[in-house]
Image: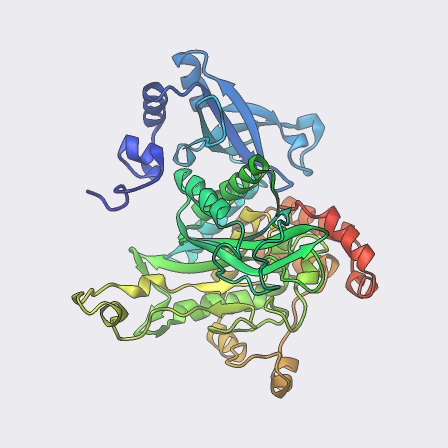
Length: 500
């Protein structure tokens, strides 16, 4: 049997007997008929980064066929700030490969993500989802390869403190119960996400944990496997929706916010990337990082100042991106180094079979570990528009292949030390810095917008909208203003608590 199908937790995959990418309208109708589905939900991300929902009751087979074929119209001016009320109608058309059984609906319900189309039946140029499609297509056209991505979704769970088995402050990394209180909640989230098609790598508790005013704040992470970049964004979108809904049912609060209080770990949204050709990972060559990978990294080094415009989208983002913590502030990259912007994680490049060492009864596996190698962008956080962010990274990596001096740029921005240690001060001074506010990010995007608009990937209207929104925060000196004002800082955190 196909290993992609065997033990797959997605009910539709198990029933239909084919991968999600191969789902057809006939498959969807057949599943609905045979499994007592009475409702269909269309879901789509709007300008605020949240999923919106349109409910359909299945009146009859003809109506079901009609909505799956023709979609429905929606008010675009209520979804996106760049659409005028005078010409606001948009079409939403379901993407069958995203179909999943709603784990929260009392009435059996099938949900699908949708794409936006304009009045002429063409993909909406400024929709984030279509922007990501264009970015991936341009990457392939320039390089002849496929851009893949996956995310590390960090979040805090907040609930009343029972006082039992208190966790060690800021020492929650991979903690087990009973010191970690929400492992069961996280694993239930993971089960629902997997059933909805999410390709999960693993989950664990994270560094951040503390108590405040009788409440536990516990940081968790769910990390995904690399897939097509378009699918990676879809999976993260659904995952955030599932985590919030399950938290609501359990009486917990959830935040993906980049910073929720001073002195405690903030939450990032690290994005891992790999480049594929003919099913093979191109990030390694002869056991070391390849020229392909270094060119992609060079592109990210050049565009890093404007990537924050997509990945760090409200003022609290820049209270996470501060020196001497694990969040990056300087534009550099390195191996297994958490003080850098782009990290090359440990990649199973050792020439030993560790499984045999740990399990002497096993035989040689000959497992192709090169497939595991990725590079990780560490600046983004949960405020990001997922589609714009991953599209921006696809553009950045593509740009690296268009630079004549890409390998020189990669060499000059490489570091193999902790740049925040005193003895490395000279190295730190030589590195460019990330923007320190939304206002600064907007300025950087304005300066580099041609890179993102090339090949019509990001529309000028979208870039203008992002710049205007960032500038509206007027936060150029906000970090210094709030440095010794915890009450004002708390008010800012509360304002953006449910971002993204």
